[in-house]
Image (cartoon, rainbow, N blue to C red):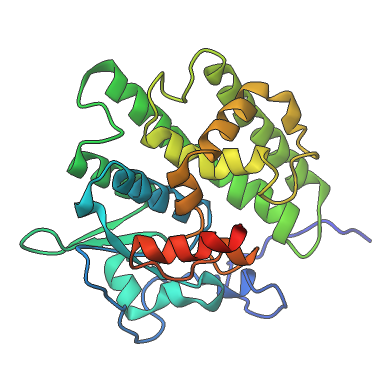
Length: 285
């Protein structure tokens, strides 16, 4: 008798089971039901959830507002991925890949749909001329680390995070495999941050905003409750950077937008003005 898994000749979608995340899997893309997206008054309409990928964009928007850029005002609507809201006809119309976050920029003659978190960061940074060097080596380094985050974080989230925190059964092989990769990535960051204040150099940039929600939250103990397991205290440079970023007011504001869990003072399901965030954060006092 063996417990070895034998792959089927052809994989098919099996929706039987109690795991809510596995049950939303499907080999077919596109809308599963008809529902229009809500829309507010601002030029920027964000449809998201306060996962690490969602936090990237709301942190950047709050940083832009902190600089006094009024054109960065936005409406943010929660997309509950556990309830399959990312498969509505409205959301799929903005992002055919059905992943949060998604942005509609209505500031021009025609609305522009922007999806994939790095693409949204790049779009906004270029639109407002902030947090991305205009040219030269500094710009290239920022983009290097922005896309490093896009390629690396799935191993942390969909790899380690899934098998450690969400899989029905904890299995040694996948957890160990992805834990070692997560630690390798932390070591990459630690060595980079030993040489620089911020990830791409001495200036705070969209690279930091892309990386902090995953790796900053991880080493600070906010992600998967796995900080001790991964020995994050050994990555002193990452911890120094993560703590510094955490203290930024715009980060504290951006991380709670489209969040419906946690303490009362960190839950803001929808955001339409700065006052919405102020009202929620006031509960912390």
